[in-house]
Length: 266
Ligand code: THG
Image (cartoon, rainbow, N blue to C red; front, side, top):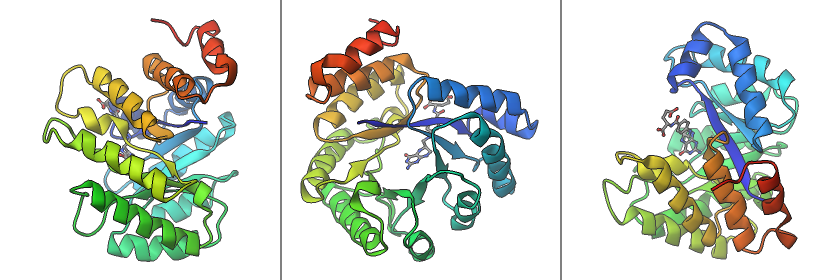
């Protein structure tokens, strides 16, 4: 089943930033209830945008979100200390977003994750920066997977993020990621994926069209998850429809249910 990580609770979004500043719990709780109702598998929580306030904002967000939804959280921070604090607050196994091959982050995160009951996003980033080609993504995914598996994280709980880069800056970035996902899926059977889908359309107009088309292509080569806005009906319809077309929806039940619920409309 496709894993949808709802991206909306992110203080880089002006409305969320304002709600967090005002400690407006009703706004946040209403938003996450809607993400859950729309079919999100996890709710991503990212409190990184108010510099100097990340730990306290994260703590407050988890406190107000957790009691009103049944789905687990995806704890989103580059700071291992924030992730550790957040992990200490959750009442069901979270997704940890994320570990990467960046020196200090890797060295701190790996022992922290050791033997824990968590799913983990493995970001294909290292100290040299973003991957520049398909071989880079593959090599980094393999290194991360072997390190995590040695630390006791089962392959089925690892979500490789190939780091989608804007097509507007380099027309080869779409193909690079498609080829990388295909090869990671082939070389690491059983592994999962996630991605910041909207990165592909950065700098272009009508971004949602670009995001939807790319998601279909990515699912065709094995991508089975994404960080996206579950309240965007059209992208959720693309997920369900593409699952059906790829033979992952027996008797088209998921698709038909989506239509009946009014979630899939042309
Ligand atoms: N990989 C991983 N984690 C991630 C990212 C990733 N976490 C953060 C980010 N990237 C994914 N989350 C968001 C959250 C909000 C928005 C985009 C990505 C967002 N985007 C609007 C847009 O794209 O136009 C801007 C504001 C809006 O419309 O609300 O909001 O890559 N592992």
